[in-house]
Length: 262
Image 1 (cartoon, rainbow, N blue to C red):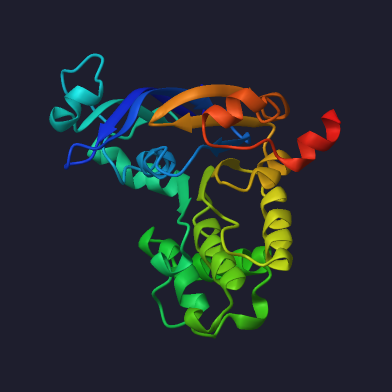
Image 2 (cartoon, rainbow, N blue to C red; image 1 turned 30 degrees about the vertical axis):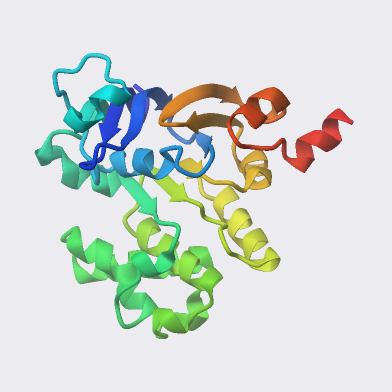
């Protein structure tokens, strides 16, 4: 059984904007998958469905299209390790399995110290103090923030704040990490550090990003999403090297693949 199963997923926002349409894919345990597409493609909306931040479920519209958008709330199914994300009783377990990292770390950091932020998730899992402390220490060490554990998160650099967010998610021991633009706005050094960190994580990853060089480095497989629909799903080296496909969906062939073909 795949870790992630998305079947015929469709979603429209309350204002009628159709964000996703007939989206289907699976992710295996330990697999790293890139999610690429232009701005407004629906990448963030898709990530939010994976831990129930947006609802999926039947609406009676078998094949929704933009004309149905104002009547459509959510359609299709999202299953994480066999659990249906549309079932409210499953959400606590699903949210323990799926760690979601937002593009802006300030949307996730709100405690007075880094240690408190990293501890927030494990504490809300109902773990005892000893287990929480152990998980916090392990997660902080994994992201290399041992020297700033007692600092306020807003005193950290952007790269450090992103690592602090990752530590908070790792402390909950997820099976899938879903990243929304993890390298956005990082300087070259911080970007390299974060990519190295991601490469060392053994759990499954779905990485939504415009950083196609990073996708080439970390993800053997890539999904191309545009206007809420999947247009390609397969080997990264083949799909991202397909210039007509890339141009048709507001993307460009990354230099790494151009160099291989030249």
